[in-house]
Image (cartoon, rainbow, N blue to C red; front, top):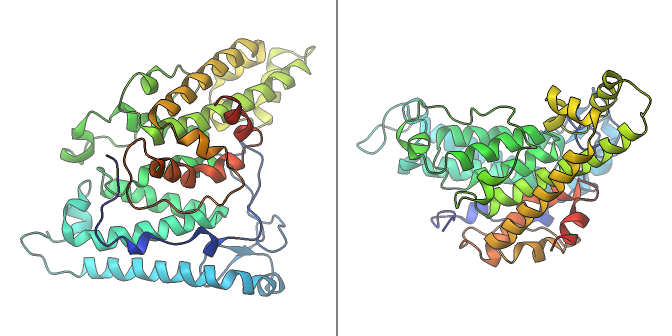
Amino acid sequence: MDSLPHDNLDIMQFSDAAIRQSTPFEYTPGEPRPPARCQACDIASDSLQRCAGCTAVLYCSRPCQTSQWSSHKNTCKLVRARRKACEDAEDDLRNAEPDPFTPPNVFETSVGHFYAIPETRPYMRARYALAQTLNHLDTVTSLEEALEHGLDMLRLNRSDELGMRHQLPPAMVRLGREQEAYDFVKWWVAHADDESHLKDMPDSPFLDLKNANALEPVDLFVRRKAAGTFELHSLALIKIRLLLALQSAEKAVAGAEDCTIQDKIAILAAAHHSSAITRHADSLLILAEDPTPVVDELTRQVREVVTAVHQANRHLLETMAQPDTDPGTAIASYAEGSREEAHAARSYSLRAWRGTPGALELLASLR
């Protein structure tokens, strides 16, 4: 059973409605980074100012910030409270007296197996709560900070009793970082049976997979029990985004029929179809020559992965077919294959699915 610990989890529970923003940010899937926008007027600018309270929301001017304060203040207070709780817990841990169960300089001496030390758990739970709140806030700034927290928590504690790894791939996708998301998911699945990478050897390579071919076959994921509901669900999201991007690429190449191969490659690269495509020169060359076989193969992969998702959790596809309802907040613990697990997967990923035009419709068609 993959679940969060049961001890003192109240800090992790909150209503998604309590941190709802006026309008979710939108961006073109595959761009290197979604543009930063004013939370009030939605203008994109490089000179936006952070809210001084939560530092997770941006405004272009004082009038814009003032106009949003009534709707933002509860969110602002929540983020500030959780940030302070995290900072206080860190101070307590750094200043704790060493004892037989708590080594000195725990942030330096216990990297990799951090949560095994009981004294670290209040800090890790407080940081988890902050990261989860920032993730649900769903601004570019808050998602980037949530990712930083999540990745550093995994560096400190590879065994990941809190399940942070399940939340990060959808956030990466939400930010247009499909390649990073694929590398992350593949690394966890590939090393799931290698406990030395996770616990006993903190100096061994960790999350060191870079620029894996996201168009490759899915046998690693669907033929092994190491890939659970969350990994398969994230893989389905990534593969569907790639398929939609390739279908767009197919149209772009068809419209450039009289262009040279190099011109077609330039057209594909300039279109920012997906970071998981544009980083690979060989993929661009294949697509420029004839994208149809790649599209057909990826379509087959998507069907295979979605089938594996349903086998891992028969409730998830049904749950995802209700996209207009509030994603809510994942509960603290769940059994594999349960409705609660399906709800958690949906809660972590729904914004990324919504941010990919056509993705939920395609997923629904494969039920």
